[in-house]
Image 1 (cartoon, rainbow, N blue to C red):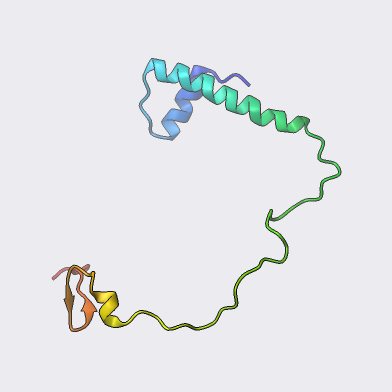
Image 2 (image 1 turned 180 degrees about the vertical axis):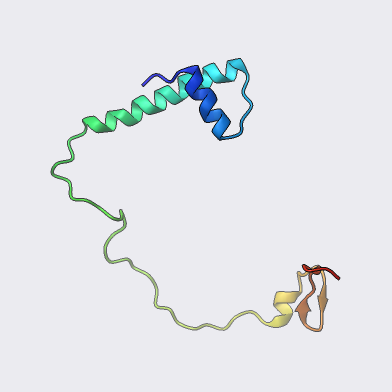
Length: 96
């Protein structure tokens, strides 16, 4: 599928891109090649392939969700740029 420069300009407008004439020509060629490649998928016979919701194996091997001890407060706060009363100190969000 060959994209026109006008179509590339419309896509660029939607993406809020300001393209040079050289870029418009380059993107028209590149996007056309991408669309041609995607169109090749229509030629693949998928009549004997079941619809798939996920490519992951049905029985995922995840570990059991077991509680484990976390980091101590001192370990958590040691890399904080600023702390106060054992908590992270952050700039005010809603004024002073």
